[in-house]
Image 1 (cartoon, rainbow, N blue to C red):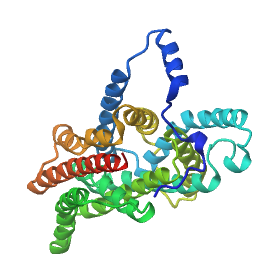
Image 2: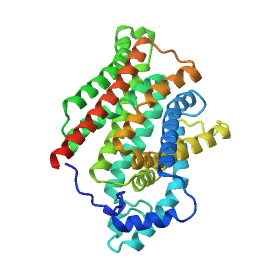
Image 3: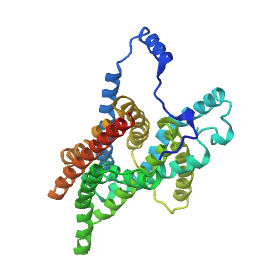
Image 4: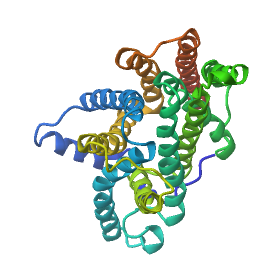
Length: 361
């Protein structure tokens, strides 16, 4: 069961009724706007492009000058430059429009969510996810990230939903999740097996695979928490970045200054630093967050998941084309199992929803 939202004014609800029809009619008579279909398709294309590029670019840049934590810093700085001012004005607007919106429902005048929720989703959806994901690309190829990062997300999300939301998994979804687990086992399991059987080879791919799974689980926990509290995408994203900027950046600075942590920001080219700040912060966090929300508004959550199921395959193909990574048999089969598992699970969820709605009628 989903808990009733404690922040109803932050949750995106679809308007209906005559008032909405009048408002929509008024907008239609105004300046020319893109149709909902055009916006939805464009948002889908942008989201898939950014998600796919994230995996390929993160692997490519992980082998360059900056350390993973340097890239995490650039990600949070880039996103913070956009989202902190946005959060400040959003909080002011919410306070002006909602008299009940007091100090207990915001944090530092920047996060539109209370401190408890901000810290929780900021820890898992911000700091932990970014640190684990970028560190994983140092050890494992992008093709492994394709299977274990977005590919494992439906499995970890479903398991956490059963635990935290008391959701029931039907036979179709269990079949799809089993296929996803099998695909992940073919990729991560083989790397672990090789490390155990032949430790002299010195392969550290299994370390990256474990980190990918942990990063995917952190993101799944963030997503389930947002769903449990019915948080809107924009307020949740702002809250995450507020926590990341306030917590990660000072700790990172102290560790680098004291010599505990190595940083290559001082010697890296400015072009590389600016690229990460714009792409990782502005693109991966801000733009893809907004376009993903637009996808859900037009396509709905089920079709959105089906569309994003192409990310593992596209990013693996991108790794082959742009990074010259080999695709071994276990990677190919793993990708097929994960992609088919997502499709089967989503189709089963869609069928279950229709049966439930029919039973209600």
